[in-house]
Structure formats: C-alpha cells, structure tokens
Amino acid sequence: MRIALLFDISGGEFLVIMLFVLIFFGAKGVPDIARGAGRFLRQVRDASNEVQREINRGASEVRRAAAEHQRQVRGMVEEPPDQAVPTQEPQVPEKP
Image 1 (cartoon, rainbow, N blue to C red):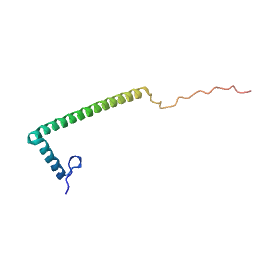
Image 2 (tube, rainbow, N blue to C red):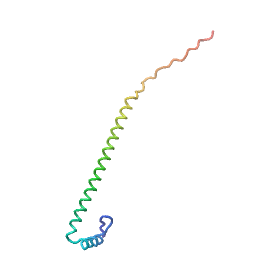
Image 3 (spheres, helix red, strand yellow):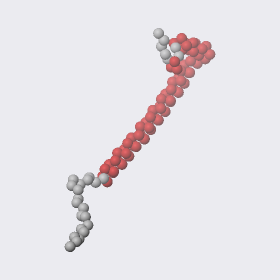
Image 4 (tube, helix red, strand yellow):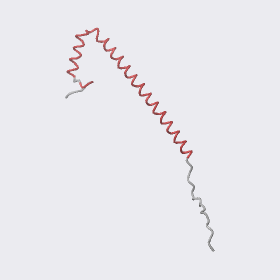
C-alpha cells in the first residue's frame, strides 16, 4: 500500500530526502532548517488567510450594495392599479 505525502512523494523517497538533508546539513543544522520551514509555512498560511478575509470582505460589500440597490428599485416601482382606468375616446358628432 502506497501512502502519498506532500507532492506525491512516497515514504521511501521521503526517507532518502531526509537522509540527504541530515548528511548535507548535519544534526545541528536540521532543527534550524525545520524552524525556518515552519516560519515560512506560517507566513504563507497567514498571508493566505488575509487574502481570503479581504475577498470575503469585498464580497459582503458587493452583496450589501446589491441589496440596497434592489430596495431602491423596489421603492421606485409603483404597484399596478387593481382596475384599469377607462380612457375616453374622442366623440365624433353624429350626422343628421
């Protein structure tokens, strides 16, 4: 059974990468790299949340403006009368 990790990396591939990092940076450098990666991911997540909040704020402003516009349009439209008003036709004099 294959367990997919980030970027579709299997467990074996992940272990090889971790071994390379450990050999290349040493045991003392790995915690610093992990801290830096954690800070970077937190900044990305915070920026993503801020963008999402701005989009939601803009969408709610558009919804409010649309609702206000609908209320104004409904207030301007008059209800049609229940009975039609009869119109007078011009009277033509009768011929004798």
